[in-house]
Image (cartoon, rainbow over all chains, first blue to last red; front, side, top):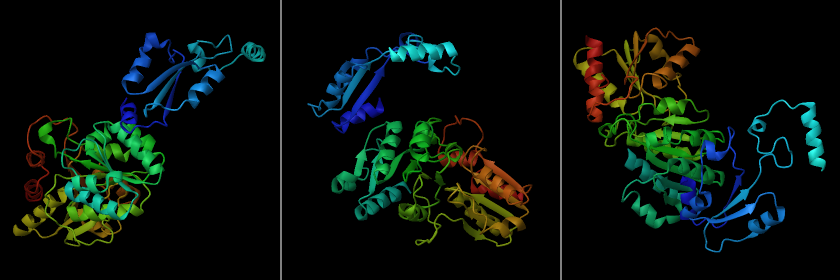
Length: 116
Length: 304
């Protein structure tokens, strides 16, 4: 919050903050652990030009990252993502945040999902 | 001492465009001339110390030499992580100018008394820690700081302390030695306590006790015994006096260093603030007296 306030003060129009917004913390969903909603309004209140995109869409990301600040203000991109995207077992699973042991079956599923 | 420090930063900034001053919210009139004449080297950023330290780390990475000033605790307690991770981890040449060391802000209560700052800073690698005893030492330390690539923490006294050190010093960071070269009693201190030690030495002399030596240690991040090792070895009693909690400050550093050098540590004792939050109201002077750190208490510790 301190840094955000100063980014506006110093008119950092070449600063882009990207929030990897997967709705998860290490223990569970952000809504259960520490809800940060409404996130877009918070960044806007700190003076950021704020955009929401699909964080898995390369074209959408490229477009928003190339976008120049029109108001001389810093920018924030809230990229909506799915934690563990593309691997069925890992998607939206807190267990996979700290996972140290991966079974042979996990590896097989991982390979299948990544090649599909 | 604070005025001298800030004025020195301004003088350095005039000659060297790498020098910048960054303050939190230091009050109207702080370095107003610098603000007007060197606006690109002057930043007043508001009460946001965590950001301040990150900000100056970035400036230092870009080749600037930032001097940052706020109240001691707001560096050491509030921005501890940023000091460790943004400054010290990368060993960046930032000078943290810490106002109100020790009990200077005692009338404002435990939020403002910096009685653990030396211990907190000592736990971070790469940081050099200084507690000058007067304005002469402060000025020359900061002047010399331009050639040092490490981060610095500089503890300020209240200001208006009498001058005890020379106007020109080649090595202002080195220990300063006073009194008997083979003393029976040796007082060792850092920061403004030197004035109490020197007064105590005079007081004892008037009472016929002249075998007293005094050491002032401006830099506590490395204890140089070289210049006073013989005095230490000759002394019957070595008392470390500090405006700090008992642990992690000057006494700890001296004890550790003496131990590693194989010196007799049984002669060492300390006089310090208690390991407690201090709630009693009073001035810095009142507190020094109440906790036995003033010259009178030092005299009594020898005569009684």
